[in-house]
Structures are given as C-alpha cells and as structure tokens.
Length: 374
Image 1 (spheres, rainbow, N blue to C red):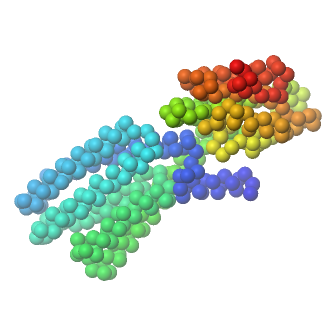
Image 2: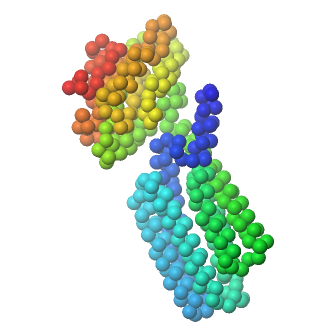
Image 3: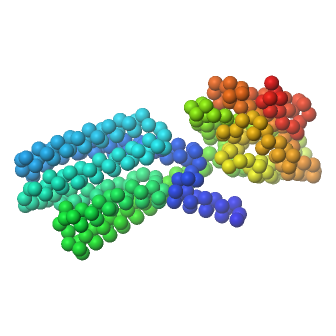
C-alpha cells in the first residue's frame, strides 16, 4: 500500500470510528462539540420554558400544570448541561454532555405524551400534540450539527429510533402498522442523513487539522502543533504520575549537504531520515520537525532507558545515505520528566536539547541519555 492509499484508508476509518483520531484532532473536536452542545442547551433552556405560554392556551388544567412543571425541570436540566459544558474539556465530558442533551428531550417526550394521553385531543390541543410527535425527528436531525463519526451517530440515533418504534407499538402515537413502518423508516433515513452531515463536517475538520499540523515536506508534526502535543502529554503524564521522555535529534553536518549538493538533495535526505526515524518508533510515539534538520520525538509512558533502546536501534540501523554515499548520522539527547524533575515541557525540551549538544561535542553520531548526562 502506498502512502496516498494509506492516508485515504486512514481518513475513511477516522470517519467511521474515533479510535484512529490523532490527539490534536480529538482536542479540536471536543472543543467544537462542547461549544455546540452548550449553545443548543442554552437555546432549548429558553425555548422549553417559553412554550409554557403556548400550552396555557392549548392544554386544559390540570394537564397544563403538569406539562409546565415538566418543562421547568427540562429547562433547568438544559441549563445545567450548558453550565457543565463551559467547564468541560475532555473527550469523556463531550460524550456525557451530548448524551445528556439527548436524554432530556427523550424523557420529556415520554412524559408529555403520558400527560396528554389523558386529555381529549381536539382543535388546538390536537395540533399541539402533533407538534410533540415531531420531537424524535427533530432530535435525530439535530445530530447533523456535530462532527461525529458514523458509529457515534448510530449510537446516539438508535435510542431515539427505538423510542419512535416502541411508542408506536404501545400506542402512544396511536399509529397503525403502515404509519408505524413509515414513521420508523423516516426516522432511520433522517439518521442516515444526519450521520452523513456529521461525517462531512468531521472530514473537513480532519483535512484542516492535518494541513495545519503537518510539515508539508516531511509530514511530521510542525513545531507549533508539536508544542501543543507536548503540553497535552506533559499534563497527562503529570496527572497520572507517569514517565514522559523526549528525544532531541539533530542530523549531523546537514548544512554541508545544502551547500554542496543543493536544497533538493537536502530535502531528499530529510525525507529519507524522517522515514527511517518513523519506522523505528513505537505505536503512539510522535515525531515533530522542530526546525530545519532538528526533530523531537515524544515518547509517552517511556522511561529514559526504554527510550534509549529505541534510539540506539535507530542509530545502529542508520537513517539512510547522504548524496556522497556516506551514512546519514545524528546526534541525540534524551530527557525524561521524572528523572529531570521538569516543571513544564519547556524545561524538558531544554534538557534534551542540552544533551543533544553534548552528543555533538563528544563526536556526533551518538546518543546522550539522562543517566549518562548525570
């Protein structure tokens, strides 16, 4: 499989399920969905309470009182969802907030029809009852607002479709068989359209994030996106009290390649070195082009000795050939969060950078680890 086919397949898989989403895409998606959930929750908090006035003219007492009480509870629940969304920033928070956003109208739908089942449906009351019947379809259509994968859209849509089916079976909507089939079919078709809309948004987001965070030549993470990754991984490692190792890699005598053979030859050397570095890394490690011929490897969950094994294998295998046939070599410095007692990722980078310069001064084409630098 060539690189283009791999990227296409990876992008397609990312539209089906979020397991392959890169951390920065997950972060952007969480921010976007939480913002939209908060916006919708605030809107429905006001609209749900405001509809009490409409019910007053259409629904007789005491049904109106019970509906008003249910609407006030639903409005408070929507307001609470909006409040927690403003303080949330994790993937778990995103899923929970979206689930709450859909659970509130689902329960209100069941509650309202239980109340209205005891009221004679005629005139304006019948029209209002018909509006309530559209609530499941509105909920399903609303999924199209969020950049969800196909699997996520299915998970959120299925309970609503089942609700529409069960409500028709038990007689909440008093549907005959043909009406029930048509209603469920319509709900399913709307779910598919909403899922396609969400996948379209997600695909556009994936393209934008990839364009923004990837170096156009090497396809490594750019320095700006690498800094975001470092900050994210450092926070995760600090909270879980787990190790986090950085490798600062500088290709040896790279300037001479550009000076003697031109920048095109230098670009080919960078591409070959990048490919060999990437092939030597573990799943979950991240490669950042820090600048020019400098690279940073982020190794989450690895202590210095574990990371040293990865980098020593890379140096032993080599990173390709220079235009003159000589091997591409590099000087590498390692730093680890707990060993170096770093207070933030910048201190960790500085320690790895310093050890990389120690490797340069010691003769190049070598690795200086945390222990050796002590």
